Length: 406
Image (cartoon, rainbow, N blue to C red):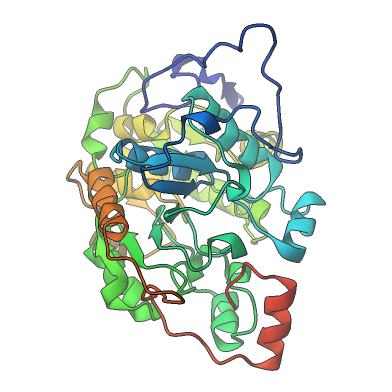
């Protein structure tokens, strides 16, 4: 039987599918642009501080993964009347020391995903303010509220849902019960529960109901749709050469400290395929070499893609197999036969709105906050949840990890 093959992503747009392929600006005359990383001091060598208007409102977009970064970039493009700056996701306090040690490398706080974010921002010549050091800002737009650094507390804030949230497992219920524990221990299952934002832009009415059930203030939630997933039909027109296959989109569960029986998952995919061509699209954050070894062992003859436009692959497949991946929404929106560890009926009720207007809708929410009357001295914008009583354990955790919102 033919062994599994790893396919070079060269048939796809090279870096950022779904966006115009632009050329990074040339280095300034008389020198070269310094290459910087997340772990170096990012003090402005590639920032346009002189271009910032003293009159226009200033907005900081806190990005994360490439998906999150592309979403917030689309929102910023709908806000041409503000001075927009961007930062990779960041933290402060003891958690920042942990990040610098490399222990968070597989998360959006780590260097790998952080440098991908910076590369994207540079490609589109966007103003980078690493960790929001050039504040204060008039508004913050963030991709996640699991960590809310001290320098954005008290600033009007819009939280944008990225996609699917993790299941409510045992750790989720422990964090909800022991309120002094940081929310990020339960990963994205606790998205929206910080209360440290003014508006929460979500994908659909189904997600609005989900977040309300979890305890988010209904008045804070705005159903806007989410960029990247508001026009799935556009992926039907593509240059991906394969058709009529069974596509498996893997996850980075193991890289984000969750258990996964990958061998069992691969064997399930082989059974579903029942002799049809099996194609694996690896998650960009997973250990690709390990994943390929496992696929060769359990699914000989499968094609393996490390890179490429996942949404276009979904558009051309007959069957989509996932576990806990937002990509299942593309398959559902396009009417594919889908498999997921989540209940499909629940997923269908939460498919992101398909109206091609998510970025514009989110920008309107942001503009509404920017245009709101100024607060009196010491005032505070209404948050999504009332402040919690400060127990001793919570006070200790808040002092050690000031950005976690306990």
